[in-house]
Image (cartoon, rainbow, N blue to C red; front, side, top):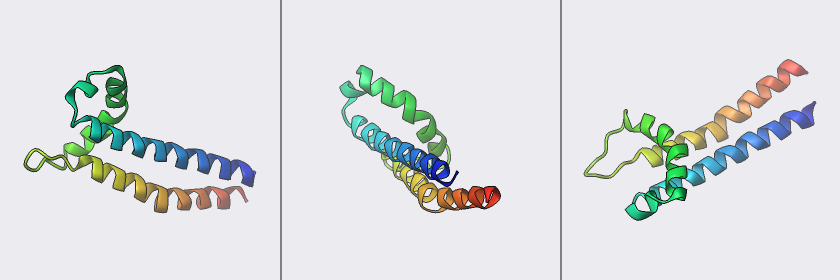
Length: 96
């Protein structure tokens, strides 16, 4: 059972790493409008924009620069570093 919990933890951590990478790619694609309109750009937008859009409601752009991707990556970092390991330990203690 411990191996299963560790496996799920690693899958979630990997998924959050990939999502952080997609946020970075989306930020770079925002500098090249023609890339945003490609199939790849639209896919990245559909995946990342709901999350970034929710953050942009609370953090406005400053001089045309959005800090929502930075805040989004920071939130994912906090979730990976503090919330997820403690949640796994909590589940482990319930199952032990």
